[in-house]
Amino acid sequence: MRNKNIVKMTQIAMLVALVVVLQTVGTFVKVGAFNLSLVLIPIVIGGYLFGPKTGALLGAAFGVMALIYSISGSDAGGFMMWQANWWLTAIVCLVKGTAAGWVSGLISATLTKKEKPFLGILLASMAAPVVNTGIFLAFLTTCYKNTLISWAAGSGYGNSASELATYILMSIVLVNFAFEFITTVVLSPATKRIIGAIQKTQR
Image (cartoon, rainbow, N blue to C red; front, side, top):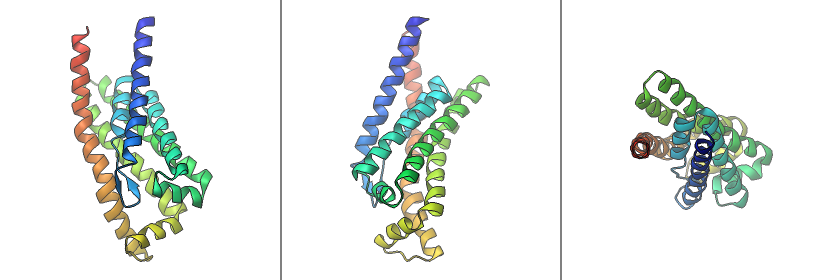
């Protein structure tokens, strides 16, 4: 039992390290004011392997890294949000990551108990980017209106409701969210299969 706990803690630590690495790499891949990242994949995998609490832990690690890069200016969009409202930006970063990990882990755990592991990892992969981006957009459109207008103006959009909606659709949903959604949905189940094959060889 002790050995199993040590192995579990080691695996979780490795996933946290992977979250840090992918979030760091993501700061160098930018589209406009936003960074593209594969960081949701280890979060989904961790939630699948160890449950919603671990998913939330990994999501929180993602949130902490996002906050650090927002404060430092490595994430240009996050830095503007930090300047606009530092304490609310801290909440946004931590809440959206933690919630994405917890929800995806809960979905995996629920469907795995019902002997539907592939459906579980697939739906968890879909849920993580939806929750992450959904919470971000909820805060952005209600609490960061001036920041949103600045981002839109930088991309050539006006400040009317229709133009801001178009900016969100074109710059956030169809680029950032679409990238996270597609890569997470495609790569998480594939990674899960690889991990499953490795685990079988170790038995």
